[in-house]
Amino acid sequence: MAISSGKHENAIDRLISYISVKNLTTGNRLPSIKNLAVELDLPPHAVRDALLEAQTIGLVRVQPRSGAYVQSVSFSPLVAAFSKMLPRTLTGDDNNLLDLLEARRLIETDLVGMTATRRRLADLVPVRDAVQGMYSDSRDYDAYVRHNEEFHLGLARIAGNQVLLIVLRHLLQLLRAVLVERQPASWWDEQSAKREADAREHEAIYTAVLAGDPAAARAAMLVHLRDTTESLLPTYATKSS
Image 1 (cartoon, rainbow, N blue to C red):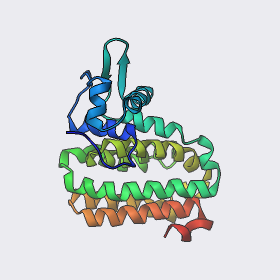
Image 2: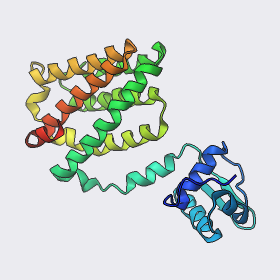
Image 3: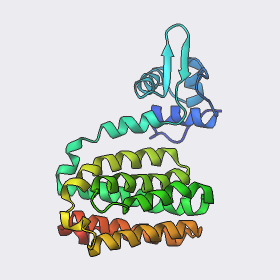
Image 4: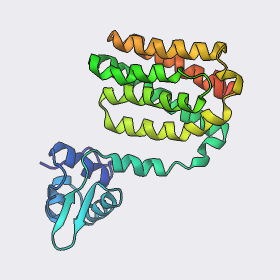
C-alpha cells in the first residue's frame, strides 16, 4: 500500500513516514528506488532526491551498488539539522528572543502535562535533585543555570517525546547566554523576592508532577515561563500573556 498523506506533503516527509510506519530500525535496508517510488506514490527522481536529503541529515546511509540503509530511527539528526539553521544571533534581537521564549513556553507547557501523566516516582529523583541544586549556593549563578536546565530537560525526558526533547534542549542552549547576560545581579541575591518566587514556581511544578496532576502542572509551568519572559523582556511582557 502506498504511503501518501496528500499532494502537498514533500518527499522527505513521506520517506520519514514510511520508515516510521514500517517500524524500520537502524541497519534495515530500504527498498530499491523503483519499489520505494511505488510505496511512496512518488516519481523515482523525487525518491532519489529524498534519499540524498535524508543522508545529509543522517537518517539514512546510501551505499553505491548496495542500496540505502536506515541510519537513525530517533530522528535526532533531523532536529539537530533544524537547530543548526537557527543562528546564534537570533537571541540578539528582542523580537527574535520573544519568539524563542514563546516557542519554549508552547512546548514545555504541553510536555509537562504529559510528564505528570506518565511519571513514575523513581523518574522524579533527578528532577528533585535539580531543584535542590538550583538554590544550594547563593554565590554560584552558573550552577543555578545548569541545574535549571537539568530540571526542565528532566521533566521533558519523562514525557517521552524524543523529538520535542531535542528541540527543547537546543532552545535552552540558545537561551543560556541570555540568562547569564541579561539577568540582573540583584535577581540572584539571596534575599531577592524574584529569586524566592522562582524557587516557589519550580517547587509548584515539581509538586504538581509528583501528584500526577497534568492540569496543575501545565498551569504552574505557564506561570513560571511567563515570569521568565517578563524578567528577560520587561518591555514585551504584555505580548506574551
